[in-house]
Each structure stands twice: as C-alpha cells, then as structure tokens.
Image 1 (cartoon, helix red, strand yellow):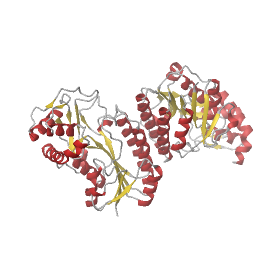
Image 2: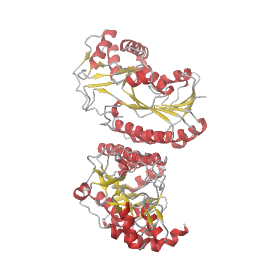
Image 3: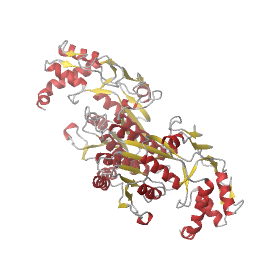
Image 4: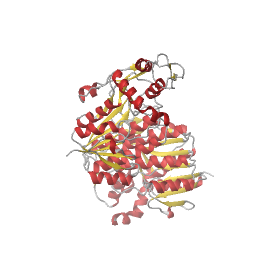
Length: 307
Length: 307
C-alpha cells in the first residue's frame, strides 16, 4: 500500500492534490494546522503543527509512509520574501525529512521555487543551465533546503524530486495577489492600479500545479523540475483577458504602481523535464483558468468582501 | 558590555577560545552539554543541549548577548561526513541564530569548513574564486547554513563572519585522527599504517584556530574567511617531523592504507583575507605545534591507553 504524508494539505496547492492522490491509489495522510475534512472524502487528516518536532516524529513513526509530499511553508503575501519564518521552515523541513526516512520513507517531493534562480540572469529558466543565486531569504532558504535534502536522500537511497513552482493563480488565492486583486477590482467595478504590466511570466492554474506535483510524486523523476505551464504572458495580457471576460475595459491601470525592485523583465520556465521526463502537460489554458477563477470569485465575493 | 555566547565551548576548538575571549573583554557565556568549569576561570557556564529549541530560546532571552560564536557541530571522526545529525545541526543552528538576533544580537561568527569547496577543482582554496560544491552531507550542510544565515543576517543588519576551518591538530584531539594516531603509535613504539602521505594539506594548531576565531569575532570582517595557517605540508612531511621528534624513524608506514576516495592531492588555503582583512597570523610553526602535542600525549597517554 502506498501511503503519502501531505503537508500544507489545506493550503492553496495542497487542497487540490488530495483527490488526485486518492485517485492515484494512495492512502492519503493530510497534515495541517487547520484541517478541512470537507475538502476531500477518503483522506485521513492529522491536526498537527509540523514545527513541533515531537509531533512530526510521532506522525512519521505511526504512519510509516512510503511517500512524502512537502508543500507547507510560510507564504504570507508581501512578507514571505524576507521573513524570519523561512529559517523555521528550513529547520522543520529537515527534521521532518529525517523522520520520514528513518521510518522507511522511499520517495519525497518538495516544493521549491523559481526564486531560487539568479534573477539577474534569467529569462527562460532551465534547471540545468540557469544558475541558482537567490536574491531573497525565501529563495535562499528553499535552495539551501534542496541542497541538504538532496545530499541526505542520496545517502539513504531515497528518491527526491524538487518541484520549482513559478507563478500560479486560481480559486482560493489570497485576495491581495495579482490575479485576485485584478479580478476582484473588476467585479467591484473599481479601478485597479498595477505596475507597468510589461513583465513576462509563466502563470499556471493552481489545479494544474497540484496535478503536476502529483504526477511528479508517481513518476521516477528526481532532482529539480520546473512546475510551470510552458506558456507565458505579460501581466498586461492577463489583465486584459480578465477585463475582456468581466467586461471592465480600462479599469486595470497599468503603470499606476512602480515595478517591484529586482523583478526581472522576463521570468519563464523551460518545461522540457516536466513535459518529457515526467510526461505531464497542463489542462488549463489561461482563458479557461481565468474564467473559472472569475466564476469562483463571483460566488465567494461577499465572503471575501466581508473579510 | 560585550557578551558572547560560545557554543561547543568544551569542544576541541571551543575550550581554547575561552581564555582569549575573557582577555578580549567579553562576558563569556559558555554553552555545552558537558560543561567543564576547570577549563577557564571567569566564564559563565550553561549546561544546555542547543538541539532543545526551548532551552536555546531561554538562553538567548536571558543573556541578550551582543556576540555569538557558534562552534558546536556533530564531529564524530569517520562518521560526521555523511551522518544524519548534520540535518539536526543545520536546524538548531538556524533556530539559535534567529533567537540570538531577536534578542538584540549584533555580530555572529560561525564555523564553516574547507569541505564546502569543490574538491574536484581545488588546490589553494580562495573564498572568492574557488567554487563551493561540497561532495559530502557535512559540507553541503555547512554551506547551506552559511547561505541562509548570511541572507538572514543581511536582512537584520547583523554582521556575520563565516570561518572555514581547514585541518587542525593539537592537544586533546580525538585519538583516531591523523596526528594523534601517528604520535601515539610512535610513543607506543608501534608501527603506524598510513595512506600514501603525498596529500598536501594546511594543518594548523588548534590554539591558533581558536585564536583566529576570536580575532574574527572582534574584527569587522564579514563573509567567508579561511581559517588556516597559509603554510602547507604533505602528510608524509608531518609524519616525518613526528618521527624526528619522537625518534621513531621508519615506524610510520606510508602507503600501507589506501588514500581516501575523493580526497584531493592538494587542499590548502589562500589566507589573504585572514591575514590582511582580519590582521591575524598564526603563532605556532608545525615543529612547535607538534612538539607541544607530543608532550601533551606523553602526559596523557596512560589515560588515552585506558580508553
């Protein structure tokens, strides 16, 4: 029996992985500080703070999982780039990995980030050819964790795949990020101030991100693998598509805010490994993904407005 | 008042730093799982396992140290290169650093290692020019800790100097390492099987290593700094000097053991930064250092033989 521990199981990506993991034949052990059993039937929830080493150890010893999908991290929008919490997450991730391996774990997938790459030298990021030289504490921490985890797993003949997440959007995303800010502004018929919008990015629907992580888990791929669509857009193009769908032409004001310092003009992903090595392709086009996201916000707007 | 927390205070290097730190005007808080108040007068000992986050937090909050000298690590000879304990030490080091900074810490010195460098491409290691690409879990872990600690300290305007230790020897070293194995074999009039001995290394007396760390702490230097003598010898040369001093000619048998796989022919240090940036030079020549070490083993041999 394949048993997987999923951390961050009620998080933005994690919640989308659960059903797919059940369907892939896993006994799914969902770990969260804030379990949400309504998310998916047939999942075993563990109400747990994995910062607490003893709890994490007890979890690993009681489950003896074969697989670990480690998605949890500190991700508070605007703060996570330089927050001291990144150190805590490196620490608890290493301790979790060690416990998982000690109790017989065989395969690990962890969430890395495009922020590991050297943003002064990127355009299309390749796992092999683009150097890693993160400019933020978040990127440094993810990259350092990958290095130690890879060396440790190699010593123990445990497989590790490290999924570098690029940009994502979709139902349930925190309202202050780019796509929900644009969509909600348009739905409220407010003007939405944005940066120049000329930045080119690889945005992927969160359900595709989750699907790629599950594909990675059941594959035999190892090492760093970009988790991205392979399809890139300017932020302006995304905003214009949202305006087209919501019929709020002109409401998104590009150039009203400064571009974020250090942000590269182009930050897209070489997805050869994901496509050919893992054999995975995205299901959503940007148009479909935005349509679904807009529909979700229409339903959930009141709740969001009340927050 | 300058207050320093020293971890690994009763360890091989740490014990030599204590007197120097007192003399440099620090209120010295020596942390150890195995305190040894006989080592130095005027030092405040804390009996503590820094793996225990709560104890480490309580320590930092009660002392509000200005300086941190973090020397503690897992170093069991032969095992430390690939031991899982390296993960625990990355984790507890990050948590200690965070607590130290949160309670007002201003300057940090940590012990790194020449094992961080790419040993397939070294001869004389330069902090700027020799790439880091560690081949061992120990080297990977130290290097990852440096990256995260440096980014964290930069965000908090805390100074960090990272001392990369090369090879060391001296009184009190674990008996199975190269210098004590040779010295003790010669003192017992036993033949000592060794590898080829053609490897060129920078060996430094442990009191000099400690002195360099203290100099680093009181300096304003930051970033990676090689902790080495700048003087290199073949292992054969060191063995021959020991034979000369103990008058045990021929007793050290070079070539009796295979060279360790992956060990570079030459692994020495560019000490420009330490010498010119920190303004520090070693006090011991190899001859003096070996003479003192031999004298110490003569005194302590019975105790050692009984182990």
